[in-house]
Image (cartoon, rainbow, N blue to C red; front, side, top):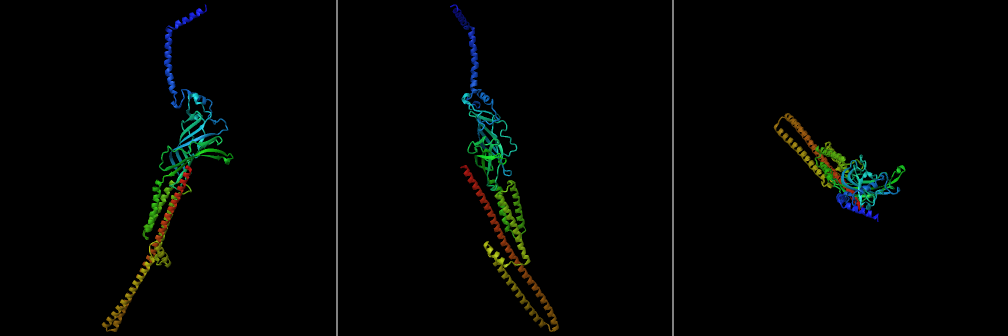
Length: 522
């Protein structure tokens, strides 16, 4: 009892002490702590709200703790697999946004691409419930392992990797790493210009690892095709398809180290918009070709006939030089280039035929008539076939008419001379009684008559020769006219045949490309 009493006395003493000013001080201190902790609690709760800062379901400090745990012993130099013999799958997606340039001369394609790569990293997994339902977080790309994916057709000499500047990756709770990269690529493209400007080109973009073989890294496409949702329409090219396909190729067989490598090849199919080239290349070529046919309608003996043809030929040569600046250096000559060359050959043939026809006209100077077989073959049958009529009958009628005119001229000259001389002799006999004087006068008269007759014979022969020369010249001119029509027909037929042949080949190639495109799309 003695011990209990003091104890009770001490408890009562304490109660007495707390009920005084100390109690009020304690209450004041508790209120102060409450005013400090409540705002701090709301502030920390708002910063850890779902979706804030890109950390859905996480709270303040969750991503920091997770980051410290995941990257404490993380080694980005090693392939993140559970078993070193396991093969990891890398998915690749490509979105084409803009075609910057298609260089046919150097056979390169420059385009703006959005690359997306994804893979599973077994070292970067966590349980979201342990970190306040944290689904993913973002870290710099240099901190994680990344596959050595390259563009096999890359021709950019300044390419030093996909990470230009500071890039980030998004890590999901299951270890799935997502890497999105905007990039401007310059790749090689096998361009076939045989159907220019109605051509369809196919450019391949193969993405795959450079060092890791197919046993270490396998490639997959994120979608069946590449994305064209953000593509900006190009002024020269239309996009027909953008198909993705997985391939496995073996490299190093020449060095006895043949190893399979997996890649994803995106085939970009382009069709050229031909309107610009039709109006600026094809139409001028057709106009020059049609104008060249007008040279056959110029006068045969005109000097402008030859100079006009030479001017057109030089224009076509300049046109071909301009065309060569556009097209690449290749053994596959486009059909429009073939048409230009054929047109130049036809123009040269036309000029040669013009020279030949002018030479035919010059044959009339030697007074050699047109052979009979040529008159029948060319001036009759061929002229009738070309709807020019039978030109040989015209010359036969002219020849008969000229011969009749000349014979009538000869008969009238002889009769007039004889009657005139007889009349003069009778008159002289009646007037002159002296025979010697009469003989003297008659000698002078006969000499004069002979001189007149000789002069008339010379004039008659000259008229005959001129008429014969004119007739022969008309024959050769008619022959040249028929030959000119023959060469004109040959030129037109050859030009249109070449044009239709090239157009048919171009259309057949375009239809084949469309068929391949439809087959690929299905």
